[in-house]
Amino acid sequence: MSDFLKNFSLEGKVAWITGASYGLGLAYAVAYAESGAKIVFNDINQELVDKGLAEYEKRGIKAFGKVCDVTKEDQVQAFVAAVEKEVGTIDILVNNAGIIKRIPMHEMSVEQWNQVIDVDLTGPFICSKAVLPAMMKKRSGKIINACSMMSEFGRETVSAYAAAKGGLKMLTRNICSEYGQYNIQCNAIGPGYIATPQTAPLREKQPDGSMHPFDRFIRSKTPAQRWGRTEDLMGLAVFLASPASDFINGQVVYIDGGISAYIGQDPGNLDPSKFTDIDESTAQ
Ligand code: NAP
Ligand code: GCO
Image 1 (cartoon, protein in one colour):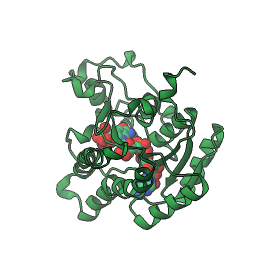
Image 2 (cartoon, helix red, strand yellow):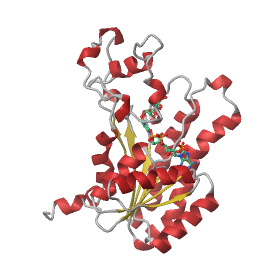
Image 3 (cartoon, protein in one colour):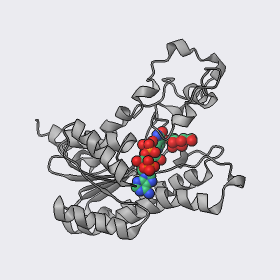
């Protein structure tokens, strides 16, 4: 490998991806393993951790996985201590774990609101706080947050999620501001609409077999007229975790197929025969 390309290598690094049993977290972890990193991950219950371990084993990846709820500081601190004892200090943290509740705000309970804020905003705070001391001591570290189109735009029924992801954009900037002096970079990945279990309800076929209206809407807002695939995000995830991005800090990098640059077209003008898309069986 050329000296230049070594800048994109994660050889010997310990990478913790939260909520990485499937979906985008799994994709990030696979990319990191392919780039030389040791993978550690957590998920909300043992069934999901076992599912994740099986997925990694299928790909020849020896991952360290434990149950850990990112909203519980005692669990997170214990997880980090176990990783430091059994694997090594964490070099890369991806705050990937997230939930969404699509409920009109006037019908959303405070409990439902708090559940989303706890996972999507407080979780990244708790996990980042847990890894920062070792990164400060090492004077090196990468924290990557999972922002979203909803870090910039609102839409009906996702008030708590948008508030959390908007807050996560500012948390990204604040960690950059407070810890850049320790050679710690904190950036965010801002995916567009990606085909994962989280967005599957937005693509479900209608009873008459026609496209979900939101599916048609998103394609009319995306120049490529398709949903993102998890593999579309792997290169950016590796780049932001590697030495090649050491002078990038506090940024949200949107990887959205152009949605945020395009006013969109009339959904009625779309020709489904031209879609170059995945089918649901391949959405991780
Ligand atoms: P996903 O398919 O719902 O996966 C999220 C993972 O996080 C699941 O394994 C989930 O476990 C886990 N998780 C949830 N709550 C947790 C907690 N308290 N502690 C630990 N793990 C927890 O989501 P995704 O589509 O892969 O998205 C991953 C991240 O990217 C999320 O933060 C999401 O907001 C963000 N994002 C997604 C898209 C998209 O289009 N898919 C776009 C922009 C941003 P459970 O199965 O128990 O929920
Ligand atoms: C929704 C979707 C989005 C995506 C993603 C877009 O209901 O609008 O779930 O929020 O998950 O965050 O970037």
